[in-house]
Amino acid sequence: MSIASRIEALRQRYGRDLVILGHHYQADEIIDHVDIVGDSLELARRIPEIEARNIVFCGVYFMAESASLLARPGQRVFLPDHSADCAMARMARAEDVEKVLEKLTASGRRVLPLAYVNSSLAVKAVVGRFGGAVCTSSNARVMLEWAFRQADTVLFLPDRNLGRNTAGQLGIPAEQQVEIDAAGLTLDSEAAAQARLLLWPGCCPIHERLMKPEMVREFHRHFPGCRVLVHPECSPEVVALCDGSGSTAYLIKEAEKAAAEGRENALCIGTEFHLVRRLMERHADRINIIPLAQASCSDMEKVDAPRLLATLEQLESGAGAVTVDEALKAPARDSLMRMLENCR
Ligand code: SF4
Image (cartoon, rainbow, N blue to C red; front, side, top):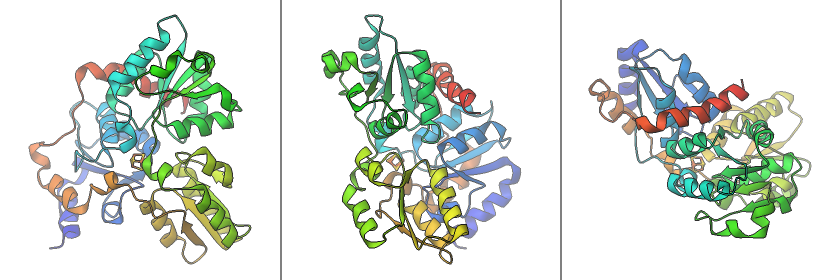
């Protein structure tokens, strides 16, 4: 039997006792077997409605941690490869975030942390303890507006690009946005003292380093009048040259609309390649979808069909279930619930 057939046989065997979730950045060999596909926000929202005892999360570690936190008592969450982490999430360590926030608030300054969902549960817990919340690329604007209603200064982490791009939408001038260092050394500067938005020095290497302004210019030269749409984890320089930017859900919807309308010869999409390739194939008969860069996430790729099969084969034993430190649960849940409540 092929690996795919063995996975399907196990899915049949577990029936209602198993739900497999897959992030849009997963390869087809995984997406072919999932019950629910979505971006971080959609998948987090679906967890509370799942009744199955076993949830297999095909994505990266921070997503499985959040799923484990939101799961019901007795439910088990599995990630097929625990080393599938997120490079951006690794750029913000909870100890550093805590030290920086202590330093920032020591004088009574009201600073609210807003953490992109691509962060560890330990970071989400620190953020929750400081009254802050989580956001995704779908709701970053709503949550940044919310954060500014709570405090004069916001610390956005770990993605400086999503922070800057969202601040740009709110009209916050560049001089009021200051990138700090992870050790908090730059906090003593006059600029940091005046800033409305402090940015953690993190980024997604896929979106920041592999998607460049010259690639956007090149596409516009070859396809005059055609649009380039990118994910807001791209740098503000790239976003400024593009015709639109938004979350994974936004990019998928725009591709669907463009294919249905059939007015454009080509549409360029700048985000993780597995998703773009799926959109290219899905709409190939209606529109020419072109990737801005063939940039795939090596962490997402660690979850492959053989690892999914191995996880399903040992599901009964419970080995490898993602667990969450008890002490982190309440504050991390607070930060996640503030997002879910503000973005119903
Ligand atoms: S694409 Fe970037 S942000 Fe997304 S999981 Fe990979 S490294 Fe993290």
